[in-house]
Amino acid sequence: MQTAKIVLTCLFLGMALSSCLDNSTDSKPIIEPSGSADYYINNQTSVALNLIYRISGNSADSSKTIPKESSTKFFRDGIFGVNPSPSRSLDKIVFYKGSPNSSEPVLTIKPIKDDQWNITEEKGFEESEYGFRKYELTITTEDLQ
Image (cartoon, helix red, strand yellow):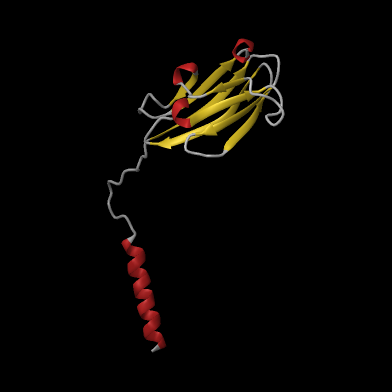
């Protein structure tokens, strides 16, 4: 009886494993169309800015400090079937000169508009409609007044 159980178990496992084999010679890789993007703030002011931003479809806020006179990446997004853009990825961005807990916002961007951002790098669009983009939003002293 024990031997019959072992034989049946081995037979069942052998059939299960062999059914997973791909016996075709013309197999092609599955390519999922997707795009990705990095988002930067180019702080051209003389003060560090604290950034509070909300990602689309998310109820929690995220934060990042942007040093003065620098361009800093604050977010990366990737979406299957779509190229991310600022208006698809972000709901709002709020800038503070001091701590967000102790100061008033100096600039709020809501709604996010794609035409306010510069595309500083693109990759992968030569072969597909999907690829990678680097977006940058420039903030100047005049924007904060």
